[in-house]
Length: 467
Image 1 (cartoon, rainbow, N blue to C red):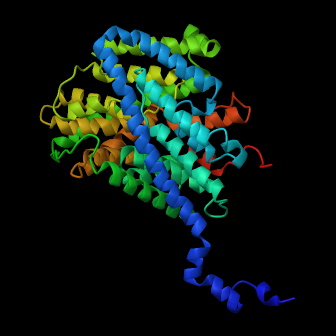
Image 2: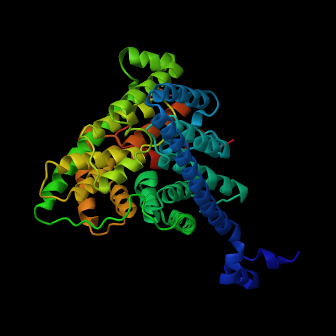
Image 3: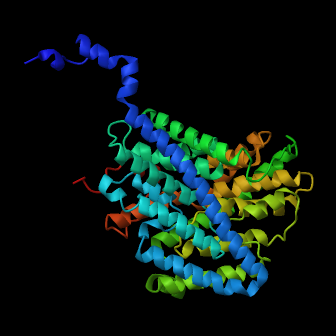
């Protein structure tokens, strides 16, 4: 036998050849190609997703403009259709998609199939679009995380990746690329992966995440351009009197966002109380119809400003248009009913829109502070209060408004809101829902939410061994 090929690593000509840098590039081409293709594919899907949702909501707006009472027909029927399809055919597509992606990071390869797959990704895009065509107050950013994770996981399976570039790191990279492409904010994608999806930045994962996010960002920028969603703002904040606004808006946004999240956490643990809870448990389709009717009532009461993602309303406020102070609480209610109905859809853009309404309302109490600055601080504060990811919130608002001058005030407001939110909602929303999802998958539907959610997700073993 020729023993040349059995020399130990680090000795002999073969070992030197295998360790040579050009050969190592060729040797690892499947891993690199999977990340490159995955990042580009995620960006293309995110752009198509954005176009589909915009067309869907535009259709709803045209019908309601023709006859406002049509909202009382479209919203209940649409939510019944989406909730029924989700419940009976794609149960893994319900809700935001971020809790499912976080849970998938702690699942076995077999279990991930019910949460992250091409079927789930397609259903997420289709059903979220139908939900927006029905007037639901949902966003596409959370669903884009699950879509991105599903696509990247498919790449991992296609190229049979093992070792450092495993399914878990590819899932994390896909979720980050999804949020970067959805918001057209590459930096926010990286921060989101660190702060929300993983909570720990592992060296073996960082290169994968960065590569996927950069490629998704470049593709998105190349196709849709570098145009911030909320336009360009160059407002400044005085370091004297302006910091009073930072504290006040941060506190208000954190408490209100935390109360919203705490309600959803409690509802996920114990269900809704009274007859409403019995209706939701025993007749979920009828409950979805009731939620649709509530969304229509709120929409009419708000002057048709609480439907959809809320991007238009937030941009209008930033451009100087005025809205009644009731827009903020009504947008929160519309988002709450949309989420409780069980349809696919995220909380990111509705939370930013509601935060803009909060900032506009607070600006009336702070006449010495620029109104545009109050709106930006309100967006970061309420968003942080809901998701409890302060750096992500500040970076998203900064990138979506192309405003670097307010970076420090935005960060200060976000951390103020984070502290206030934790006082009323000790369990971060997405982590609590992920733990609940994991408990349901393992059969322990009564398992309580733990206090240290991030540690549990990072350190606990898979629910079942791989077969």
